[in-house]
Length: 178
Image (cartoon, rainbow, N blue to C red; front, side, top):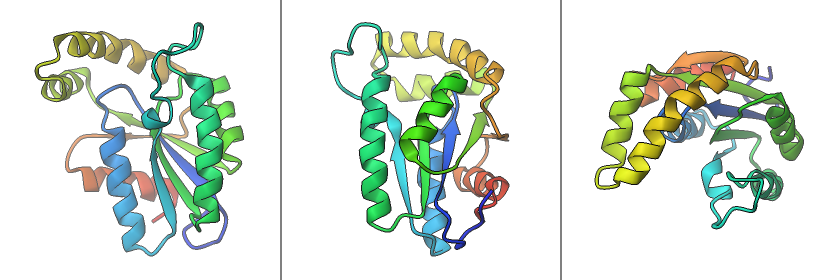
């Protein structure tokens, strides 16, 4: 793993099921990296794939995500970002390879682990008034959690409970970035 201010570009991928806190932890990690004076970019990968309708055979717009990730990474690096903090989902080794190839820099994957009862509570709060969305996310949360846990794509795991800044600090510390 590279260390802060060593000039070696690197990426840290926050992986986890829906409701694990990936986006919140990524935002807090960005704040901590800024406080440390480390040039970086924070990317929520859901926004790089958000196009409707998805093409047949690619329900989560994975191909679009990778094309956009290449471009955004190139632009962030050109703007001076040495580190990339990514919030998203990697389900298998092929997905990890594809993300690493798109980034063009070494990738560390942190799984944010949260018990399903906490996930379900978070999802209910997030999807108030959206029963169809809530139902889909509740169904997907356990399924995706099991897929990620069994994927073998994780370098380390951090519990995503407690204050989000503490979780972000734990992630960055484990990655060797703080």
